Length: 341
Image (tube, rainbow, N blue to C red):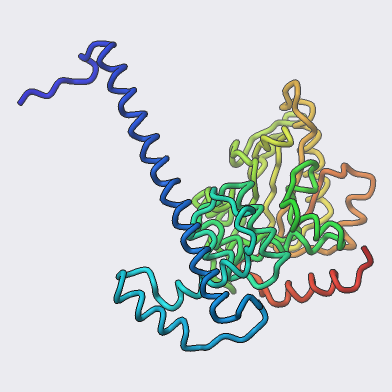
């Protein structure tokens, strides 16, 4: 049987081929959305039936430890897979965590909700729910953001009102401070500690894991280049990493330091920012943002060294391991409990 090359097909036939292919893909996506909506509806109602049966409508009442075990056994005999004790527990938690069905978003899959129901704290859970909608995370991305304590890290530098705003709206990006974290978690680089690594190795590993680094940086970052060369007074300089932020419409310059940041590092970043503002910005671009990402940071030195400088120059820390979420959670809880609204 002869195979006709697509280049040799008539324009009319190619158009037909594209129409059918596009409609097929759209139909598949629509079918998946329909299945997901049905699954969310079914699992929410199953959770509701369990809660109403065992608790008689009272979400604080204790329930029999054998109920889920018995249901798992009997439902599996009737319908096959999908009714493990853990799945039934997720359905039960789904109803308890999201009791108002009309407020559920069908943009998230059942797998997303299975991750969200594991979060006990209502404020924290609300943040991840909203942020997932804003940034369209996959399930592995949602899991990684939870494990890295994204909410707590964002909340550390905020007061009570700002923490509650995070939970009610997610991370809304309106100014440079909204895209900068106090601590960046780079556990995906898999650099063991203690380990003697160079700034070049750190930079190379970040580029090799660019997709995960972009996830850690947050929404709106696009990669421009590494070791970005600029020349000032015939002297060449290289900026470790350059990004462009689509929402804030500005360049973001990142310099990496494997030790404690020094005052001359801050002065150098300030020069980079000045160069980009004068030489690299196009019409409509906003002033650049500079981030020095260092292993250690002397807060007092940074305060003095940045005195009178651009408020868009930041010094942040990075760590090569996942944070202790309980310690972070206790700090945030303390802020919420002690500050006045």
